[in-house]
Image (cartoon, rainbow, N blue to C red; front, side, top):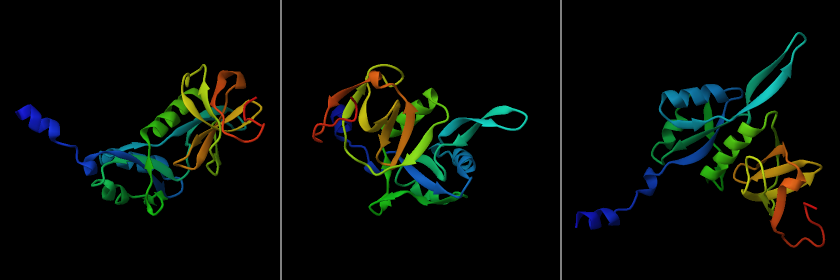
Length: 189
């Protein structure tokens, strides 16, 4: 009988942790992430490995991939604590509410940064294009939406954030799974 009572108990939706993007003061991304960690707020500040050239040397530095953004994974009750952190300006909103970032999108960012350095971001308008499956590499068997292919550069769409991450992925490493009707042209040929 106890098992039955336990089986019917549902998880409180307000207690479920979700990822949110927060705006920070300029150049405060790493500091805000550190402050979140001190407050026991799960967070992610994507850092891009960039090779910098000085007059006397080259050095790899880690810069925030998204300027003025840090991600926080909190419950609805914990959201106020995020806003009470120094350097945080507000949540990134979608239709007047804090935008929820899917776990899968955070994982894509993490994996993308593990495989690539000198990643560039480009602001985009979200479009529905061909669905593709990657045939080899870190993202093997993953499906995604291709925004555009120019030479070897593939734009991977993160619609919740309104950004695309750019990486060199040979066209031969992707196959079209579902082609949307756009006349005779396809993004990948």
